[in-house]
Amino acid sequence: MGLFGHGSSDTEPTFMRTFVPILAFSLLCGIVGPIFLVAYFVIGDPMVGWMFYTGLAITILDVVIAFFIAQFTYRGKRRRFELEQTGRLGVADVLSVEQTNVQVNNQPMMKLKLRIHGDGIAPFEADKRLVVPLMHLAALNARRLAVLVDPYSGQFEIDWQRTSLLAGSAPARFTDTDTGREFDLSGQSDALMEIMSVFKNNNIPFGGTVDLRSNPVARQQVMDIVRRVGGQPAGRPDLRKVDYAAPPAPPRSPSQRLAELEAMRGAGNISDAEYQAVRTRILGEL
Image (cartoon, rainbow, N blue to C red; front, side, top):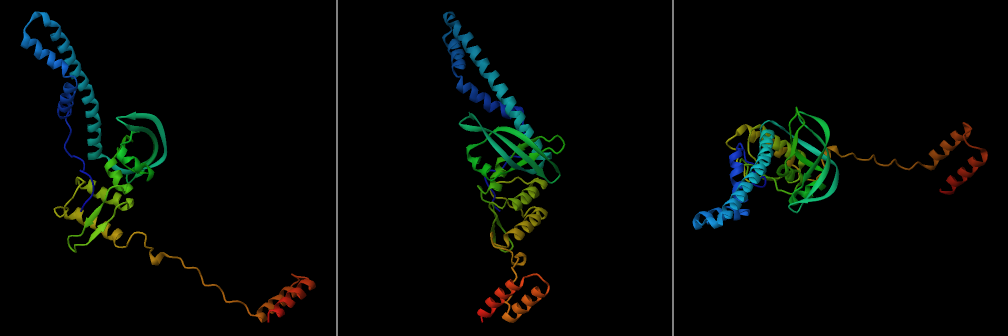
């Protein structure tokens, strides 16, 4: 079955794996520091001692900046990893979106008011200020975001990859290997939430092409959902649930109308003048 993107890594993050690439990038940006150090030792002239101190200061600054950036990044990765392992998969309904007129790396920072709910999650509302990736701006229009929630602390993170599925901006196609039949559930958010919950409950990484034949329990659960939802084309009404209006009653005959008129006159509901006017009109239609 095909889902989307490259999925999420289930590898536990470590500080060193986060720090090393950031340090390399920081040293590249501040490469003048290491260059001054190398030049000082190559030249070996006391007159260029300033190169040593300047290069050392810049290099230390590079390392310190890389450390703090890595620390911040690592905490975010660690929090996301823990939510992926122990959190609940839920839905955040977007109640409001506000622009902050702030951009980070040319991506807008927005303030969202969300109502979060899901299986095993007590519904609650929360405000979140975050940078929205440009490729996921369209998902806000769908007003439904996928979130990972700690049901005890209420801490949550928006999962943009799963959100792409809910919004229909990423394809979700499934193939029944028994029959060879293909199902396209793209944009069918309720069914996809069920399927993503099955994946998470069975610790199956999502994304790209996933072969569930090695996990028959999860495969059966997913295909039950797919067959239930994909068995009928989207937008086709269920004829068993269509309410049909009762056919209109046949028009009353003049004799029936005259009889009703006589009954109304006898009950005193109309005056003699009204009786005569209506009786004349009925007889004139014959």
